[in-house]
Every structure is written in structure tokens, then in C-alpha cells.
Amino acid sequence: GAGVSQSPSNKVTEKGKDVELRCDPISGHTALYWYRQSLGQGLEFLIYFQGNSAPDKSGLPSDRFSAERTGGSVSTLTIQRTQQEDSAVYLCASSFDRAGTQYFGPGTRLLVL
Amino acid sequence: AQSVTQPDIHITVSEGASLELRCNYSYGATPYLFWYVQSPGQGLQLLLKYFSGDTLVQGIKGFEAEFKRSQSSFNLRKPSVHWSDAAEYFCAVASSYNTDKLIFGTGTRLQVFP
Image (cartoon, rainbow over all chains, first blue to last red; front, side):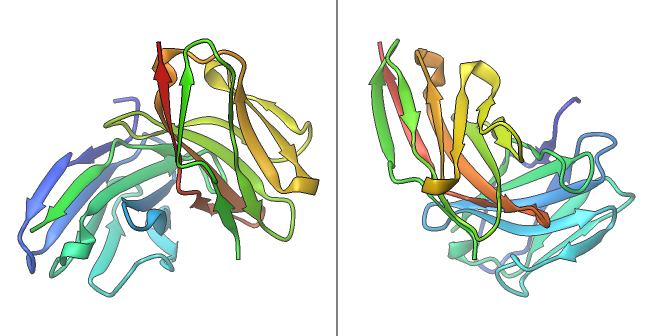
């Protein structure tokens, strides 16, 4: 496809379970970003990848959150031992290179019961 | 630290009326500024951006924004609103040396009445 895709589009899980969220960036985009959009916090930066490395992990809220990117393409955001406050929309974006315009995916809506 | 303020949480306008959405930023140097729009169930779409040069920036869908350094503002405008413009609008800022990290405002929800 032409745009950034994310899966699943919706995820409902029980407190304490682990979840994995996937992002497929636009083909050829070297930079990939994760953001979280929640009612209480608005849009927050989580982590940024250039290629497969993550120079900036400053936005990850706790050590329960981790992300990886393989092959300079797909990225997975993993949340371990989910808590109710993790409920939010997780948005992924990609750009052609660092400092390029960020193009966003539709997001994954996570609900932790 | 960088921050963005969008003072209006919710704005309602009639179709055909003009629109101005306010955005104020806090940053010591010249920032990179962006406006994104989010329609229900959709991701964020870039409307326009300002990096340098002409302070009046034209974007897609007939939107424009003006960078005013003296007021630390980057307000979004449209002369005539269409019903399809109903959405949530986000202003964002990035520093010139760390454009990877966008700092977003809390958003303004626009409602358009026929």
C-alpha cells in the first residue's frame, strides 16, 4: 500500500497480559516513529528509529514498553504486563529520512480491561 | 523545554464562514512548526509546515498559516470552511536540531454546521 499501515486496528486485552502492536512504514522510509494518543496526555512521542537503531527512547513511559525494528522496515511495539493506563491509540509514523515530513498510520486502539 | 498551546478545545463554525485556529509555542530558537488534521478514525494528515523563509505558509485543502515570531504563534486559517473540514486539528513543534520528535498541542476539535 501507499501509506503507513498498523495492525491490529483495535485490541482489547486484560490487565497483566502482553500485547504487540505492528507498524509497516511507507516503503523506502528510513525513519519510523511511535506516538501515543490518550485522553489525559494528548499526543506523546514514544520512540524513534533510524534504520534498525533507536537513538531516542526518551518517551517510553516505563520499562514495560519496548520496541524493535527489523530489516529497516517493520516495527513492533511491545507492552508487557499491560495496565489500564496503557489504554490509548498508538500511532506510528514514517519519514523518508531524519527530519523529513512524518506520515502517520491510522493507529491501533488499545483497551486494557 | 518546548511546548505547544492550543487555547481552543472546541470551535463551531457555519459552513462558508472563515476559520482561525490558534497555536502558541514555547521554544528558544526558531522552531519547525506543523499543522496536522485528524478525521474520525483516521491517522494524522499533514496540512502544512514552516521551517524557514516566508512566514505565510500555504497548505493543502485551502489552509494557510502565519508564523509570527513576536507573538510565538502559528495560527491556522481558512477563508471559507467546508463541512468536510470537521475534524481535530493539532499544532506541533520540533526543534531545528531534533526534528525527530514532534511536540503536539492538545488539539482543537472543529465542528461545522450547514
